[in-house]
Length: 125
Image (cartoon, rainbow, N blue to C red; front, side, top):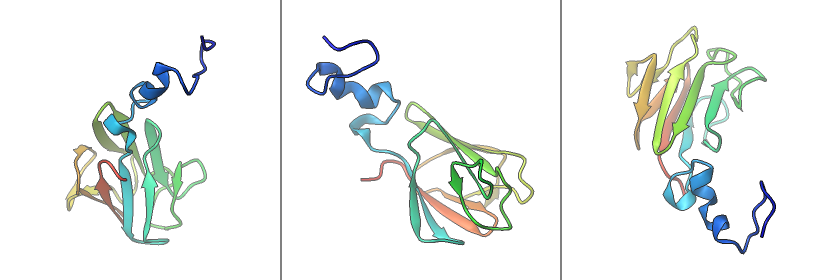
């Protein structure tokens, strides 16, 4: 029997890690694909429950753009739902071309932060 807080890879609990950690079924992570802006193209898997994007070192995803605030936006995963919230950024957040303070996101949505554009992929391979 494994100790509390640890998983034996051969135990039945090991197959449930994706459920315990809040990953979507199948363990695939939602991913932001940066298609425009400094450093593009690149991908950022949203592996933690809250991912902050900005230009500052305190952001989980750092992008070197003067048009981004230090902490510009936060992406939140709650079960199968992914949402974002503007962190009072100077240049705002646009979802599918519409300025938004917060939004629930879906496959293929475009998110623009200053000169940076992402496309959301709900379950990347």
